[in-house]
Image 1 (tube, rainbow over the protein chains, first blue to last red):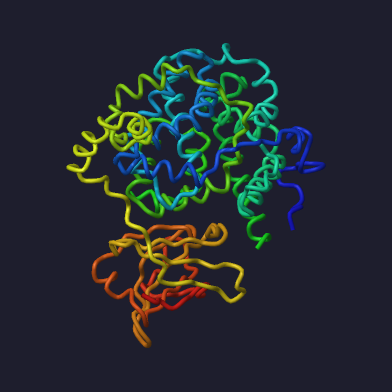
Image 2 (cartoon, rainbow over the protein chains, first blue to last red; image 1 turned 90 degrees about the horizontal axis):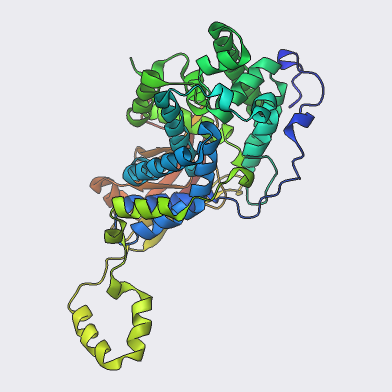
Length: 228
Length: 229
């Protein structure tokens, strides 16, 4: 059953209030992975329909990729540059998208995230001060803004379950482990930046991340094992 | 060393997805995703498990100039339908009859764009419970096999699905593909394509992650169906 007690001393309801109200943000026209996958494959085909497919892909996904990039770099014009570079990469590497993968949106978002992270490293900007404080002080709220945890009838059963597990398991993580994971993910902070922001030694932050990842994985795998 | 053998493969996948894998370590990992199927499989599993839907709230509408720049730099117009392939053109044609005649002559001289050949259904795979059904289609050119499941079916964390072709009664199964889920397109080798005919059987077994270690099915057969082609 799901309520494996006390992964790292988490107390109380696994769906704690930090998660927000799942029913409060019902998305209407969510990105359809199947459609996006088809558009990516058509883009990779490099035939007469490729530009149309790529344009549709851009119209559907550019706002999300720009939003994700902006969250990491904090500046609109830099985020637009990342959006441009990301779609250049998507156009040139669409044929490397794994046709068996079912998460094309995640694949595209990871291109933008990695590009944003690299940009920040290159610009050598001391970003920690430039963050919106609310995101740093309330990482859980930031996560709720980034993800839509509500259930959608369009989701596959697998996806619904995976989303619920992730939410529960994040909620069970110990405070600092969760906070460092979420900050690293939402803001694209490196180990070093996390250490600076949290005012903790680098080694401590690294081990929070490592333990957070290990505990998250163990928790999700426990859910999987028992959900079959 | 192969990343697939790394004892922290799962942790690497997770740190990659979170974004804390940086620099050379990330480049090595990305190269491994390209070159080592096991690593790709593992990453795909974690991506599917760990990626909730993104919220619409964080979306930011980009200004038109970003797209205009992309269109210019990537030379997108050359990957569009030609002017004579567009419906807009034909609407104009209707109103200018004499010009239409001329254009028609021009168009007739050119070969039409080659449409992807339609596929033919050659098998229906069903399981014991009957809840999952997979249609197998062969492309008209015979070079690929397309699987379409009636519902999304995703392999568990430590397993893969493997698609087998049993050429005839008593013949040994031939592995066609190792799959993470049952919606897939598989490119066929010529000799395999020849064996996909009436009398053969397609089957899917559940195998350890990465596929059967022996080259023959080792796990339970979850779906099977005769080929009629």
